[in-house]
Amino acid sequence: MLWACILLPQLALDGVLRGHAEPEQPLVLLGGPSQRRVLKAANPAARALGLRAGQPLSTAQALAQGFEAVDYPSARLGEWEQLLAAWAYGFSGQVSLHYPRALLLEVGSTLGLFGPWPVFEARLREGLRALGFSHRIALAPNPAAARVLAGVRDGTAVHSAAALLDPLEALPVDRLGLAPEQAQLCQRMGLRRLGQVLALPREALARRFPRELLLQLDRLRGLAPLALAFYQPPECFQARIEFNFDVENIASLVFPLRRLIDDLGAFLIARDGGVQRFVLRLEHAEGAPTEVPVGLLAPERAPQRLLELARGRLEPLQVLRPVRALALHADELPAFVPAHSELFGARAQQLEPWAPLRERLRARLGDDAVQGLGYVADHRPERAWQASPGVLALPGGQRPGWLLPEPCELPEALPCGGPERLESGWWDGADVRRDYYRVALADGREGWAYREVGTAGPLWLQGLFG
Image (cartoon, rainbow, N blue to C red):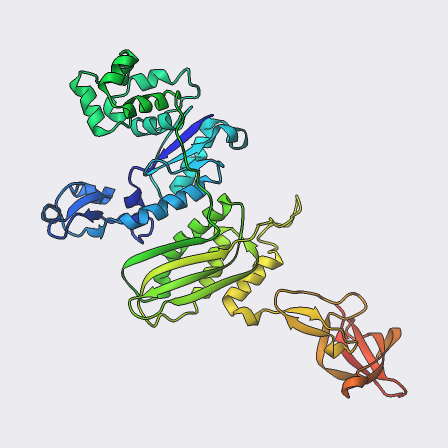
C-alpha cells in the first residue's frame, strides 16, 4: 500500500481568505481573551507590513495600520476538513482525517487510474490550488510515515518499505510525532535523531521510555498498524460564508456564491453524483432568512452551469435587508448520467443542447415562462395539447407543429392530401364534424385546413406544417 498525506499548514487562514472578496489585502486572525488579543495567523500582505503570529494586537496596531482583523474560526475548521475530505474521496476510497489539519489517502490502488505518482501528485496540487488551500504533500508506504515526512519536507516520495528507513533515520526526534515530553526526554539523553534512538537495544528503550514512544516508532517503520476511521460522504451538502460587513446589493454576493458553487461541484464530482435542487439562504441581521430555491429538471454537476442558474435566480431579487451570510443547502443528490454526444458533434458555440438552454431560460425568466407541450387524449386539435413543464412532445408528421390561435378562411386553396374525418366532443357540447386536408398555400407553405362535414363552404386554415 502507498499512502499520501496532504498537510494543511494554514487551514484557518486559507478558509477565511477563500471566502474573502479581496484576499490580497492585509488580513490577520486573532485569538486569545478580549483583554489580550494575539495574532494567530497573517496573510502575505500582512506579513509584508511586519505582522507575525504571536504578536499582541496592540503591537501589530503600532507597527501598521489598514489591516483587517478576523476572529480565529475554530468552529469552522471541521467544516473545511470535511470539504477537503469530500474532494479527496474522488481520488481514493480510503480517506482519513486521523491527524488534525491533514488528509490521509491510500493511493497505491488508484495509481493505475490517475497515472504514476508525479502525475497523480500534480492533479492533487492543482485541485487544492483551485479550492484555495495551501498544502504540503508526501508519499510513504504507511500513513504514519507519510504524515511525518509531509511535516518535514514538501514533495517527499518513498515508494517502498525498504527505502523508508534512510529518510526516517535522519529526522530530528521532535519531528517524529512524539508527545513533547517524550521528545524532550530523548534530547536530554543526547538522542537528537531517530537513527540514534533506533540504534539502542529495544529492551533498553522499553525500560526508559513510555510504551507510546515504542508504538510510534513501530508505526513509522510499518511494523505496527495505525487504526484509521475512513471518511464516508454525507447524503447532503451544506456550506456557509459569513460576512464581516452588511451586503446590500446582489452584485456583492457573486464572489461568495461562486465559492459555494465550486465547493458543491467538487463535492458532487467526488461522490460521482449530481444535484437536482438546492436552496440559497440569505441570512440577515434581523428577521427570517430569505430562501431562494434553485430547481433543475435534470441532475447537473458542472460548477459553471450551476453558477449561471443560481445567479439567474438571485439577480431579480431586491435586497430589502442587509445580508450577513450566504448559505447553500442541497439534499436532492441523485445519480448523474452524462449526456450522450456524438464523437464529431457540432461545436458548442454553434449548437447548445436543449436541456441547458431550458434551464438558463427558466433561471432568467422564471419557471412559468418556459413550458413544454404535452398530449391530451382528445381528437379535437385545439384541445389535444396542454402546457406542461419539462416536456417537449411535438406532433408527428400527420399533424402540424403550429396551430393558429383561431382558424382563418381560405378563399382559394389547393388540397394535396386528405380528407381525414374527425368527429368528437359530443359529450361536452362542443362537438365537431370536420374533414381535414393538407393544402398548398400561395406562399409555398403547407397548411392543415378543414371543411365542416355536409357543407360546400370554404376551407378553414387551422395549422401550418414545418
